[in-house]
Amino acid sequence: MLILENIEVSYGPIKALKSVSLEIAAGEIVTLIGANGAGKSTTLRAISGLVPSQSGRILFEGKEITNKPADQIVQLGVGHSPEGRRIFANMSVRENLELGAYTRRDRAGIAEDLERGLTLFPRLRERIGQNAGTLSGGEQQMLAMARALMARPRLLLLDEPSLGLAPFLVRDIFRIIQDINQQGTTVLLVEQNAHLALGIAHRGYVLETGHIVMADEAKALLANDDIKKAYLGE
Amino acid sequence: MPLWKRFGGIALVFGLLLLLDHLLYGPSRVAHDQYKEDVLIRCGLAIILAVSLNIVNGFTGQFSLGHIGFYMVGAYVGAALSTYGHTHLFPQLPTDGSPVGLWTSALPILAVSLAGGLAAAAIGFLVGLPSLRLRGDYLAIITLGFAQIILVIVRNIKAVDGATSFTGLPVASQDQALAHVATPHLTSLFWVFLVAALVIWVAYSLRFSVHGLAFLAVREDEIAAEAMGINTTRYKVLAFVLSAFFTGIAGALFAHYQSSLSNESFRFERSIDVVVMVVLGGLGSISGVTIAAVLLTILPEALRPIAQYRLVVYPLLLVILMLTRPQGIFGREEVSRAWLRGQLTSIAGWFSRRPDRV
Ligand SMILES: Nc1ncnc2c1ncn2[C@@H]1O[C@H](COP(=O)(O)OP(=O)(O)O)[C@@H](O)[C@H]1O
Ligand SMILES: [Mg+2]
Image (cartoon, rainbow over all chains, first blue to last red; front, side, top):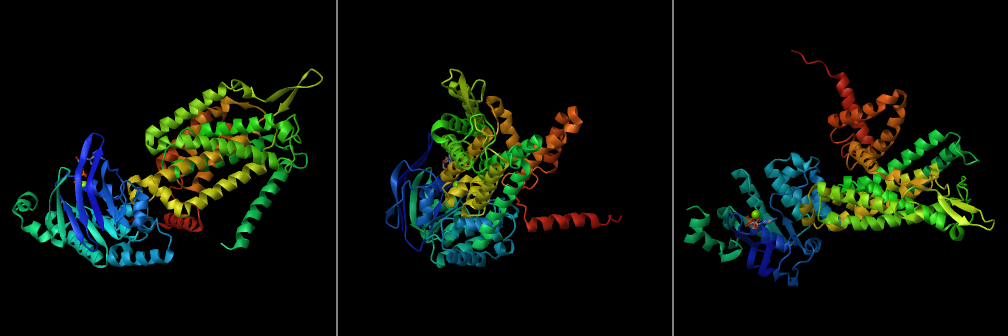
């Protein structure tokens, strides 16, 4: 479904990604783990067209999307729930969700997906008219995910959905990620919380300072001694 | 909205404006009260300026301090067209600047408005480009600089007497003496408020379309907006171009109201006046900005009786308003039935509140 070939991204003089290659098959949950600053968010930004790639190719469902404008990539079926949630704080929950469906014109389908999102995240239904800025951290994360889903993406990019959340909320969020996946959405999950991410993912990639250093089945990574030491704190 | 309702609304606005125009000017087309005309026209122009600026500063959250530059472009381009083009395009217009009948002025005013508006829009496109890379203070400074550049350029254009004031053209005539084509007096209450109604309607249609939320999303968080698939570049440039277009029209209307056009009318302070209207009305609120434009135009007039204190009281009122309502009078809200009901309930609640028991 998604293929990255030797992607390189720089921010001015800083090389954030040096030849990143990875592959995701339809229906999978794939996780990208790595320390702070490894380049995880940059990888997601490159896929969704928020930063340009200096070299390499990105293919989505066989089509080249390298350096296409972000709006076209959304329309092709890639949804991005960015790092730090970035909800529209001065808008209502409903307006946030409507903006998630910005690229769509099929009213009936949008209404259907709104309903689906609110069923997935019942807390959002209770707060539908409320300003998004007044939501708790967990609710804001739910909103960011629900908003990304409103584009009805076939591939959902999630950037650190567990960041700053209480453990019981993190469990909720991860269960919902599995639900979303089972309903047919492929997921690329970026996490610092490697243990949890590998727990729900089918496969994982390990990113270190702009390089992929390991790729394997999630179970195998969980059992790997180096990974245990570096990322699982065991 | 059903068709009859929409056309009914348009007919109502037209009828009302025609009536007001007739009451003010009568068949002679000379305002029976020049002072009243002046204040009303300035209110109308202020509405156009503030509602257009609100599209940039309020909708997309960019900060332009240079809108007076667009106003100036519209004014001079419009005036140049009607004077230089007089013999070819508008021979029916009087050359002495005397009032023109409403229907005689229709086509010429459409022409000068379009010319002024399009010229300003083209320049708005150029100024809008830096806004793609800059935000906030930086953009404000760039736009300010741009308005200053326009001022300097116009000052140096002899063809429109930019250095002094433009009152029309001297033309060689047969009796050796120099005849004169004055800038025609095309603008009347009707045209100014017609354009004001148009710009309010356009702003409302934008705000409550799919694009409205997208504009606000750009203002809130550009990166998130991009991630939603919103082409932030297109929205920012569109806002600048549209806003400059209407501001340019206002300039052309202004030029054909004054009998002489002087660069003094386009000083930097005029930009600030409009920014104040937008901030005071509530960045993004169309009705709020409209009301603020009228209030801030009338307020200095209302304060005339206290003459010398006016210059102190006026800014003081502004400071007090901004301290008590930092989000502007209306914040992001629009004046609607629901809004009025909410305000009335809260006022009623305030009056019926019992003192707290100890
Ligand atoms: N907007 C930016 N401007 C400059 N450098 C950046 C920017 N975003 C990230 N970086 C740098 O790029 C590298 C990778 O960052 P990032 O992709 O955010 O890592 P991660 O998400 O894995 O924590 C880091 O060295 C970071 O400092
Ligand atoms: Mg990150």
